[in-house]
Length: 201
Length: 201
Image (cartoon, rainbow over all chains, first blue to last red; front, top):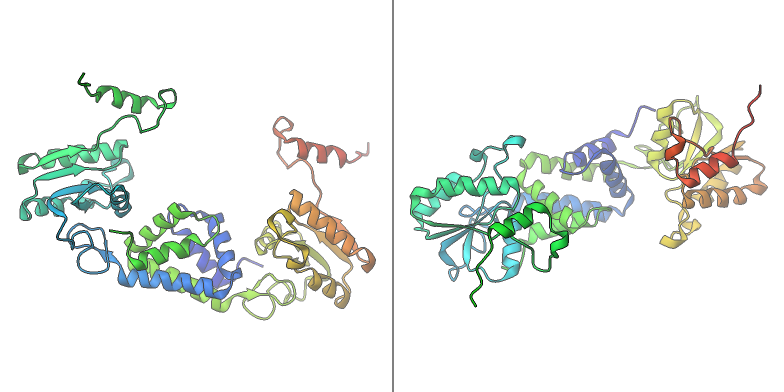
């Protein structure tokens, strides 16, 4: 016995190509797919195929779209002159969940991460400047993650947009709501201190 | 915006039905599948479909098989009167990797786990006793895991086979090779002590 049946090995290999799925997880998932009722596996295969066939990214903001443009860009009641710049489509959902933002989005599809070989030209930055010019955008809110890479990306974009006559802001960094001082990490505390707000009395 | 495009949500749901994939992982995997080149997603869907269509379990030992019987059962040079009883098909691979075992297998497809609602009748036990009778098996090696559930399953099978006139053994439990005493957990050490072997001098 040299190993697994060929079709099983192939399934394991394909699963292991997915991010954060290692060899052992891929084996366990493949075993589950084979052992569960065949309808479940067929539904998974069909869902993958249909998602690939039907979902693409909005030609304007690069959020998920089932048409040329996404539901946000297609909504005329949204403020067309304000853009919220995020890293991933899922970040759009987080901002929408809050229910307070009325502008449009721009999904970068990544962060500037030189250590992982991701340079700024891999992000949707050329498209961002084009949009800002064409749509006469007034305000850009940089909502990349509060990580080293997210901060670097935000600074890069702020510099890039300096001569475009647009107001550029960054999400506030500080103590999370409900966070106890005792358990705050050093960097969060340092940001909260340097960004302290004067209270009017 | 109420949420994700329908086809994306369906893919997330199907991925989240897989074991050990939570909601957030499913989102991340679905995003990867949509963002990667379409060939990769199509290859995954095809691999799932072909595995379901082509792989089943050996009618004799319940290991993976692409025909009626698996490659182990089909090998006439294997000792037909010795069975190694394991929990999962992957366990067969572990024993085969060692390269010392020449008998056949019997895959239970589970362990007796009353706390998780898995009763002995969900395991391939009826098939085990039938095989032992029909094939005049002489020895059964219980190679279930060294966990509480694996031990309970082994005891259950040993009792079940008591009147079948077959030699029943269990994998030795003790210190793993290379394991330092200082780092051994209590249960392993207790098993190693109670199962100590007299050295001949």
